[in-house]
Image (cartoon, rainbow, N blue to C red; front, side, top):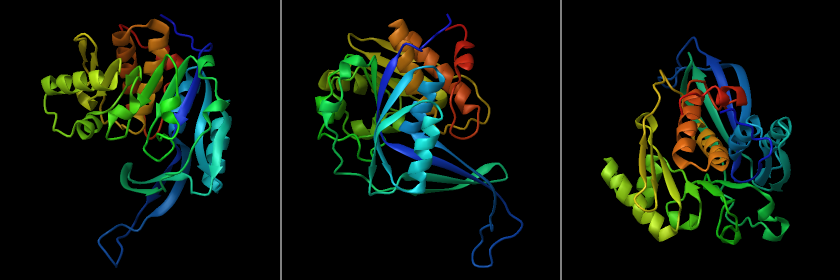
Length: 304
């Protein structure tokens, strides 16, 4: 099946940031400590967090409108510019006095040796819901990196048929009535407040959350163990991971939420949509740094 997502309108709400990569060389150790002295040779930036979700959606052909905040600093301006280059609507990315969230990664000899995050939680931000007619969008995606945009001052007022969430909060009841949430295993453990060391426990935890929070499905990302889908009425499916040598998992969850939401809307089949998203993530983790799946790569996925 050849997918075309050009007719899909997505409202993407979340925490937007810049992922920056600094590739360095080194010829000596510091005399002050047993660490290499780095000489930056190449630096580039890409949209991160919800910004990477937006890029993935746009590369697959969807029409994307972003809602969130950026600083008035140079990184905020750079983020806006990068998104506009992909014809992504940024009219509702609002300026704040806080710095744009920046994740700066330093590489030496092809390996990441340090990450420095610059961020301030925007605890008081509030969006007027009256500005949006949620019904005109085919999909609402919430890319929650727990930086303050998604808060209960206005989130609970969102009413839509298809709400997909990449969650970071420790209490999944915040996402009540969502269609699908896509936690990784660590996020699920934090929300459940127990260690999950086998699929039986995972399924029981998800079933309880689905009942208590009125969710339709939980798709748990388990890294090299694949995915598990849990739904109502004892719906359970396990999906094996694809074998990828030396994977770089940066931004893989962003690809999953983008591919899963678009595929589910088109097929109405949660298992098939999850298999497609799983395969799309395997393509992304074979690349270095924050990346995306192109529509040609997406449509090359076979046997799903």
